[in-house]
Length: 617
Image (cartoon, rainbow, N blue to C red):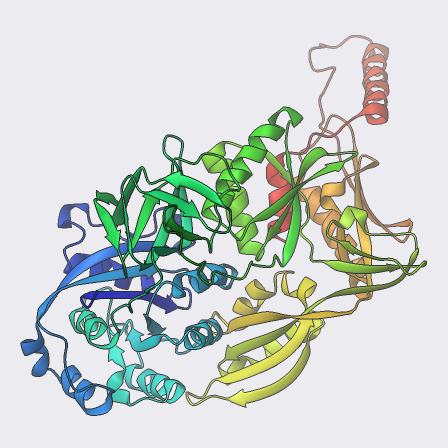
């Protein structure tokens, strides 16, 4: 194990993490030059299109470390002078197990799982941006786990790079010497060799487990032919092909059909030893048996369960219905499959009088919701209707009963409640001082209460505030980027329940209630929200053969309305001259026909309209 190093790269979104990982794979020869491409570890099309990492991805690299060369480097002298050991590792080949992690706040749970499987992290900070709010929150997790932290300033080749300033900022943040902060460019490869050497030098080798065979499951894959594939870190013993294994928590036994490593494609091998990261093909095709945080051990000599992960708590909920009820079983199977690769997704079946049967799904944020819906469409060919997302509301009824409400359509609108409470968050925003005024106004618009402000060593300001989770999910992140020209960053955590003054806003299309568009909004903003919703639907809904009435209703009354004109067709177009009365008869017949259509007309709303309404809300 002394030649194994397990580590992750943690960084804010767009700080160059995927590009740096590309250079590491290239320098270590893990990927052949002819197979090299950008974002190698981002395997999903969605990741490449959006330029972000969504799924963590483990990869095994081999690095030839030369201690003699390191002796003469500036890095080695800094290492010897200020750290706990004066001995450099011996020259040789080292196994570097990297777990690439997402940077967006919605996928922080992915990051926390990856960090539990490694001994150290590379903390990457953009030379043009500096420390961001999400950087601080992920750093706190790494420190809590006692991981070794290697600070690195990325994008040192950028035109507006402030390398020395950001190095000072990182040194102050971590309480280390500036010489301990490395510089690197994933684009040019500058500094990456030194960084790989530093990984060997600073990150400790895995420790011996000593409790028999124990492996911690941190992620899943799925194959139609091979079933569930678990990705795990072995903390004790060895796991080989053909071994009789057990999921400790689930009390389920299975045989290892194949074991191997990822570099980054799956490569079968005879066994995976203590301290290594790899995969097991289980052959299990039934969902719900294995879970993230499970301990894998042997059937013959079972070992104790390892400390797993806290279950993620959804922050927003939305109902997902198949466009056709015939596809309900397909949707259930699709969600089961997605759950295997995304353990932060939760769902339960529900039924609506108007929409039929579907699933109430919990997500970790708006981006998480968008990604899941897009994956259902792309990977499983699903046509879906998605309701307006909402947070959890605690309703106290007149008789004193307390109920948790997740769906806007179930929120009482008849004054039958004694009180409503909603989730609040504590928010931290880091911004250049020039944008403080606009951000303060943004907090006011979103019912936020601004608290302490602090000037950071690099001159930026950290603003702390409290605000309803409902408002945070109402496009706050995008508006923050807009008012700060992209320079502000945000992190948040859930604090608890507080009283709420909210009301349900319903939408009627052609005088038919549309539960998918129902939402819960602040009472002080009800008129503005109603006007915005009907205006948005007027633009998005396709024209019908009859005049389309779009209305917003709250507190038992219509408070906003729009009318979309019917499609026009000249029914007299084929006539040439003649008596005007013939034309008048045709027009009258057309008018009566449109009235009949309006009386019994049902509007077919394209499913992309539901997603556009959610995205623009």
